[in-house]
Length: 250
Image (cartoon, rainbow, N blue to C red; front, top):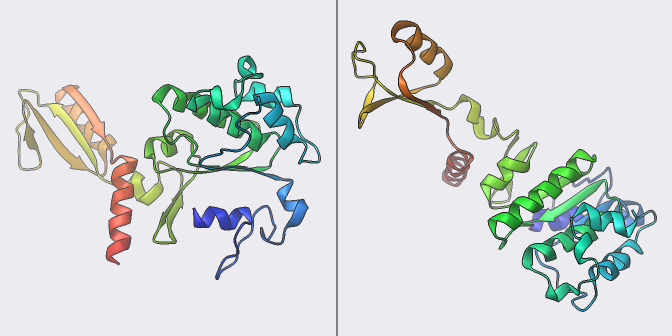
């Protein structure tokens, strides 16, 4: 949260250099603020206003906002446009927060844990909205502790540990994930001799290898395709926990 607050311009960094859209966020003034949108973890203002009224208030703060009806449509609240904010569900409220953040046509949108507390259906609906913003060319900086959310939405992931960036990469490469050993599991064919490189797992066997494609190609060439064949690479959670523990130790 501290890092995001600094990037948004609400707090000055104690050290280092911060640039967002080419600006020092603290001193960027209207030129910077008119190009960003911010969706906080929780918004409790304008409880007694309708969806339309709330978005109109935010639109009035920007030099070239999108039409209010367009913002409402983008987040899927057209049917709730005249609903009072505090009568809506949690998922609908988060969509309203998102509409307020995007109505100014931001080049950079900050989303601080936007789906915390939402049920699975509401989470997935909000994910679709975020994907739509990305497809429209908006840069979205999203903070989350939900690793499935990061993997589903992010083009790049940054892992922040103890105030330092541990790594920044695509989801499949973060923490050298693409180079980690994979687990190949299959039911051994009758003509395969199970040696020390294979570990029994019920009726199946497993092997750890950093070259799963080559291993499987050789296996199929010699014995045919085995039953129950699966390949599992370390999950994003596995990689994240390893990065956190490694950084803490160092």
